[in-house]
Amino acid sequence: MRLTFKFRAETVQYKRPVSGLIVAEDQDMAYFKLKKIGLTRIDVSLHPIETLGTWLGSDVDLRELARFYRTIGVRLKNGGNPVDAVTSGLDYLDDERLKTKVAIFAAQMAEGHKPHEAMVLAGFDSRESMVVGAYATAGNYAEAFTNLSVEIADRYRLTRSIKSMLRMPQIMVCLVWFLGLPGVFLGLAPSMMKFFKQAGNAIRVPDSIQSFYAFVAWTQSNPIPSLLLYLGIPAFVWWGVQTPWFKAQLERIKVIRQLSVKNDHAMLWGAYAVLYRAGINPAEICPMLATAAVRTDTKESLRIMGRRLKSGDDEVQSVEVAQFPKFVLDQYKAAKTSGSLADGLNRFVEDLKEDIEILTKKLGDVTDLGSKVALAVIALGLAYVVLYPAIGPALSNL
View 1 (cartoon, one colour):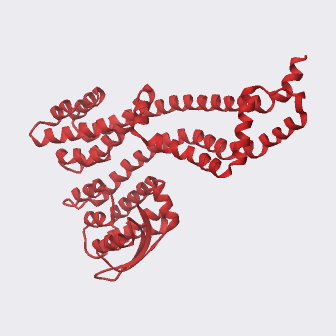
View 2 (spheres, one colour):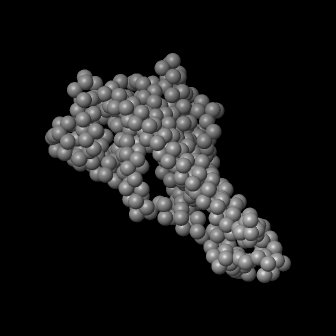
View 3 (cartoon, rainbow, N blue to C red):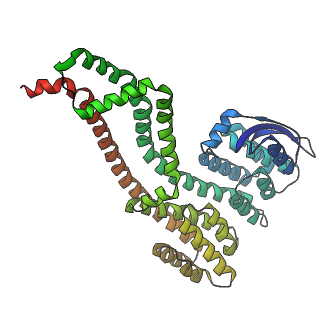
């Protein structure tokens, strides 16, 4: 089980204080990880709130990471000291996970490590540290961090557009389940049951509605099993939507499949352009990006491309053999013959972002309509079981 600990420590050589968060299986493993990256005088304690965030999938805020890299790039371009440029991030960043990496990054550079080496020790993405390392020979760290900030900002915008589309349906589901349902079962339904009991034979309740109120009565008589059922259903649904089977069913929906494919490739080829511009061998880029790809078919295509490049094939041949979607092959060929592969791939990514925007709007419209239909069905169902038994007989006599 992954836990999050807060820690205080010092660097070995200059005794520079470092504090922050670290994720590990237990306290001993957290201590070992901190010692491994060159820290000493370590004090570690569990952080329950951040541990909950870890379980819910919390990670570094991409928006703040892009801002951090952009600020470093500007300060280094203006002749600033690298350690001071990195340390300044602690003043304007809010994300504690990122601030931890920044603190270790600055401390390790102060100890004498090169920027890309310090980034590895601090736990930054290996792809990002490789870009910085590739620019090290020319000493142009400013350009490295500037390029990284652009690529990560694009990745953040793509991720945010999809998350924002799903946010309202998620809020509606939570409101209905955690507020609406208790309101019906604990307030409205028991009141109607008393009303029906007082009315006696004057109101004839249909069998289907009687079944609903029988279930309500069961929940009142069995509070513990009812609570377990109430909490277990969303937990089961949450588990279900994470399964490969459910994701495979979503792939059957054309607009979702197109959005998934284009979003994955927009992120990957944007990163490929940054790494390629930094002078990193494409045969090394492909397996690195394969670990970051979301889709299984994209991962496999990148691995095949990397193997073909290592065996001596040129880039275009490798892309052809790797079984990428046709639009990727066409755009890669166009970028390769344009005079600058990196610039051509960036134009390709811009086209993909336009497609993603259109697909996101289309899917958002469908999701919005589905949410409204679902709410209408819930409202009608509630009216049927609550209002119909009371007003049905009166309406029938009109």
